[in-house]
Length: 320
Image (cartoon, rainbow, N blue to C red; front, side, top):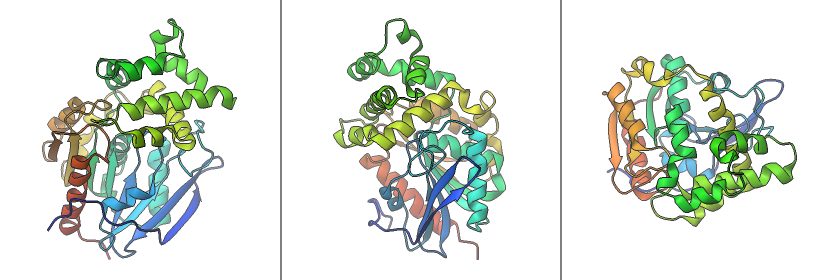
């Protein structure tokens, strides 16, 4: 019988800090079964970092659960660092971690920006992937970034007005540039209020029903700074990949099992992106949650993700 609730809380059996270059060091951890099916958890944002509850999507008796914080995020150091921080860097970091942990292949699990990075990694290294579980699809196209910065006001006008309130009318014509300037300022008195405002905006728009817990998480100092800086950095540079690269190259993944879980009323990453992806990847299982927004913690999305990991643990067998 398939689980529909999160698995119980667990602690890592191993964790550490992995230097990937002279500047960046990544936090990583393993939990669950050391001899189980390897699964890589890719957090969102970019820059949001991972959390203990992320371990709970996976049956710890069956999975070897690998979670890490991407460059500039969470417990990785330095926090909020944009130098040497691009999508190609993140892809190679995953390979560095895979080799460091002596893993031949793994299942890749990612939501929101984690779905972006999962696709980018899979298309660069398809032979290392056993399959994909993706949620809240974000392809980081200009239309999606413009939607996040401007379109969301059609559904969350109060949150948007609060988001742009610190900006002059002129600056509101280029929200990204205005926030980028503040977020990259070395003075915490300038960059922290901007980071919290960005985090509050995203948190308020991430759930179908209001969730103070989500907003509090997004406005906590570490999450807010990593998230806002990395999102502004990546959005300003068109994700550091060629135009429409993720959809254009998804055919490389057609032979692998995949499940895509999408909230019908996802305002942050609207369902049109998931629809575009499934048309380019018709072999993937597509699960629409009719009563959910963007957050992985909404009941329907959470249940669908746990059901997906339960299905994959029987479909895929760990390599000995």
